[in-house]
Length: 161
Picture 1 (tube, rainbow, N blue to C red):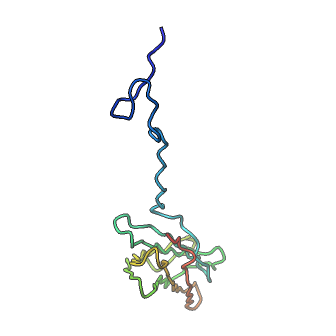
Picture 2: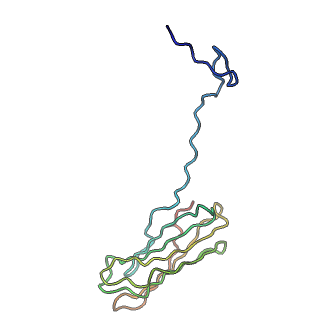
Picture 3: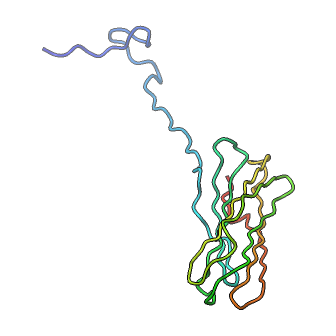
């Protein structure tokens, strides 16, 4: 005894023996992948005794904002001794705003890898039209040395989402 042929409900476009309505069983396209909320930490630059990295985290509650975490690590080429007077600052394009959190410290002790860390909340009301444009200014005093300052445009080190 053979099973009865499958049929569609009359309200679904068919009755006994009717062919499925065109497109009734078309595959549903997958939704577009959302960008990650946190991107990998990337090296922005090295200078003197420091290696500086950035990490971008998007704000899920505000599509125009992100948090950029700046981290200063001891460079493998750094001389022995503490690295003090570490200051992490940023400047953004005129169409953007920024708000800083306090830094995690200002010294990397002798033998420690670091990091000294600081978060800056960056708001770009023209996101999608204009990039997250960020300049960094980093200063430090290596053990037995004099104050060193480095400025860099790190726009290219940030994911442009």
